[in-house]
Length: 178
Ligand SMILES: [Mg+2]
Image 1 (cartoon, rainbow, N blue to C red):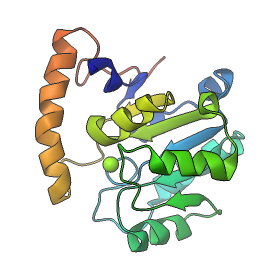
Image 2 (image 1 turned 60 degrees about the horizontal axis):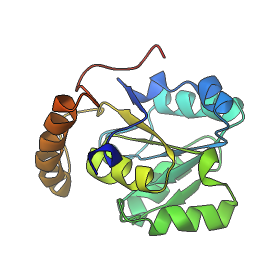
Image 3 (image 1 turned 120 degrees about the vertical axis):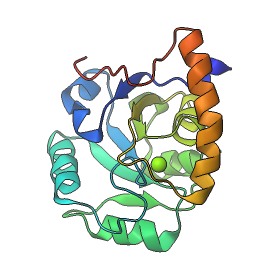
């Protein structure tokens, strides 16, 4: 059970994603969470750094898809702020599987071709690991969270402790160079 919360890779920030490494693994799409993965939840638009990062991922040949639990207005505005078109799925209800399944039906990707980048163990990692996707946990962009996320973080702290005790993951010890 505990291993369903552990990411395959743990990085200090989204910019540490290595598209070449993902491609070597057979990955074809990077599914990104938005809030606190790419920008803070109260930043409506992608920053120049985020745009440059996503452009780099796209130029490497990977597709980018946004999957967020946030509302349509937020996710749509963020997606439209990017310099190229991306598929996006609001109200995803992560960690439930429904939106990931819909995305697979829409795109035709096999689960072995999908990597998920997110900042939360309880939603992003748990949901994506249950789908058998490749999972990348990033350190949150900022410490402030949406109210509902604050509750998740309490449980997340407990899971982080359990993962540390079992030797599966140590908070703040990143795999950036791998
Ligand atoms: Mg998030």
